[in-house]
Length: 422
Image 1 (cartoon, rainbow, N blue to C red):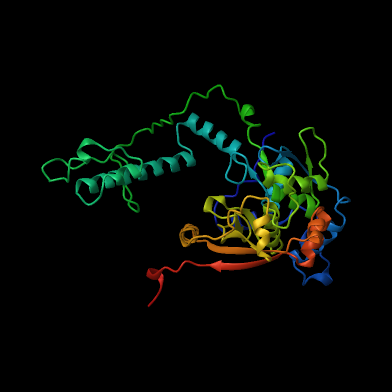
Image 2: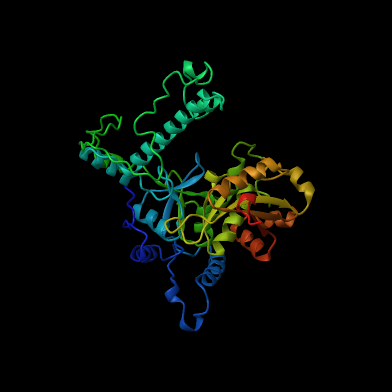
């Protein structure tokens, strides 16, 4: 089933912003809205209601009627959704999930349709124009590196590092001025910030270098992309909000207790099945605690793998602004010897880290105007009581309410001397 997008809103003006706020007004895919809060409770915020609602739902995990349906995929450890209505409601009500063939919002079908229309008109789509500009910039960098090599101020490795190929004259020595300077291909030597005009006006010829797709019909593309949720998102929606019902590949409903066990077992997919996954240092549990923590504070939480972190925090959502914070989940054992007895592979952010690793992550996020946040999760001492409580979703809620797990946030900013006033 084709995933249709919400109404497209162009521009960044006041009207466009108001339209976005109307479409993405609800921060959660639940039946209540801020307007349902009574007048005497006007001082309470939406997230006050959310915390109380979560408390009630956690006490009635099996009585809350599900609103949306998804299917668990064991190969990808994710939950897939095929109903376009359910998928877009989850996206517009909290920005949950992503399109399997898109960066976030499921736009693959719309992009393919735009490509076909552009091909019929003989023009380029926005994505193709962006790709062309990037290729032009790459070729320009290669030619600059080639000129630097011939001038003797750079090694030939600079050309190959950019994806270019070495020529014979690149390794024969510096340019002496008795031969012609290297010719930069047309369209590559343009300087950013300047406008160029052609004296001849010609009809644009587009060579997309794409196989013939004349026989491809739009209906053939409709079932290619699906909407998917991470296990953390799925458990948050199913266990804490009670608005998602997950099915298996036989279309049978997966009970919440079974879904919880599947989530806890996900880090053990390469380990022995005899090893128990119900432990306070379970990687899924640590990721979920941080996710739940920031969601309850009103942030939109999305995956941050692109920027070498675990999560990205958006103030309102991806359609409004870029993420302001990048979060790393750092496990911190209350009792040190517990780390040596864990059956899980060492957490990717656990153990001792070098300053090189830290500087790398910090610099990557500084370059994209994000503040790095270290979310230290205090893991309680592993005892029989704590382990027994974590065997069910209800027990997890009790442990969280009791404050057995604590999240400590440390924000990091990279100090750049050149940007600091003396």
